Length: 129
Image 1 (cartoon, rainbow, N blue to C red):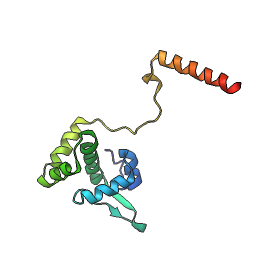
Image 2: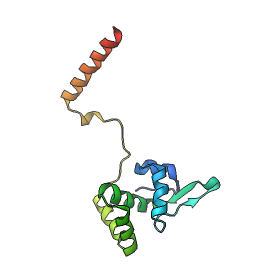
Image 3: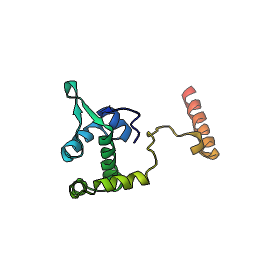
Image 4: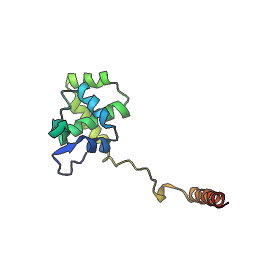
């Protein structure tokens, strides 16, 4: 995860980068208190250090991508192999791109574009009637 030179990253930014809701991050704080310790600012706003964000990203990968349970991740944290897991996951992952809701044109085949144009033309004719 790139820290972009940021030292304290707000919870909403971390949630956006990792594609998880902020309430999930707050829940993980309670489940993994030794790994996730945010700094709280004015109004109890949560901010994470870059190294904490890397830990959160590893936890996310273990839970979502590898299908582990919370108990399984706690066990890894307890037995001290979490650092190894982080290193292994970093090797396997390419830099995470922000999820996109729009596909790029090169992801479509020409036939798919032609079908989409026909559907749009049909919708246009329907709306004009």
